[in-house]
Image 1 (spheres, rainbow, N blue to C red):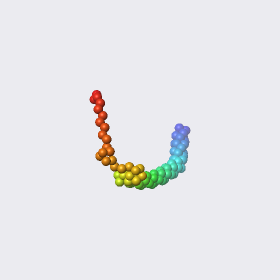
Image 2 (cartoon, helix red, strand yellow; image 1 turned 60 degrees about the vertical axis):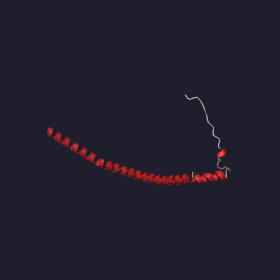
Image 3 (cartoon, rainbow, N blue to C red; image 1 turned 90 degrees about the horizontal axis):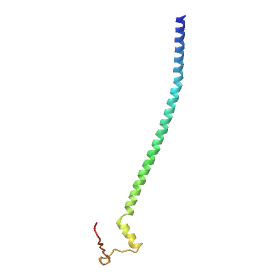
Image 4 (tube, rainbow, N blue to C red; image 1 turned 90 degrees about the vertical axis):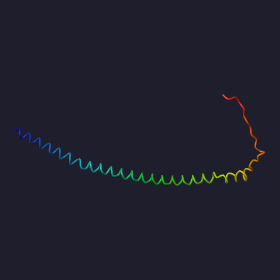
Length: 104
């Protein structure tokens, strides 16, 4: 009788083990599918971010080029003379002011 109970317990244990293994296969497949989808989404996001980064770098290069052109001395002088009616100051036009004060 004792031996019969041991065999029955072993059979129950085997059935439980086989059931767990059988149920773990679909779970693992589902987990694999989830990870594959996540990987695909992240890869797509990385590609989009790299494209955006390349565009921003190109825009930045264009802006640096424009800054260089717009801040050139000859352009600024031309605007000052032609549009604002300015001229270079003669030595006689320059007034120097000295401040004297107590040094602390």
